[in-house]
Image 1 (cartoon, rainbow, N blue to C red):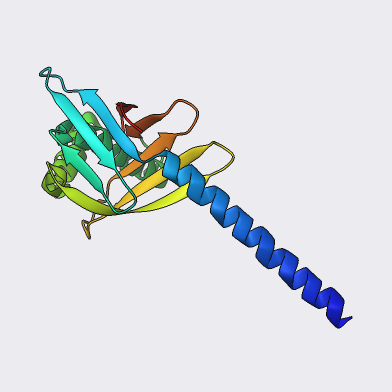
Image 2: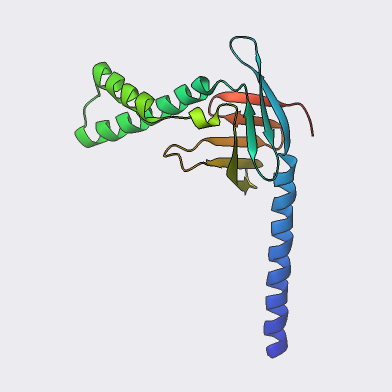
Length: 161
């Protein structure tokens, strides 16, 4: 009986180690340099390594606008569910103004920050979350199949390994 339990424990530990190594390899695939052309024609660059993510000339406003719209959508859905009435455009604008004033991502402009990472095997996606102690952290995904980094509505193409 002791041998069976020992064998089961060893198999569990071994499978856990294999799973962790597989996740680590997938996360390592997301390391590299990614580029995007800003609306003014300049080049935005994001560099991901195992320690941090670095933004260079990234137009934060485009990402912030997408985040604000997402937050407005969530709040409007919540309000409509509570009252069973449609939220008026004026109220939506007030909610939008509130989030525009609350969300401050200036620390991301031409800066580096630590991140948390999670691998989702079912979608072959790596999720990134900034760790800046900002109330509104920034989220992004790396698609292993298409090798693209997406932060809200902005898609960066991989330019280096």
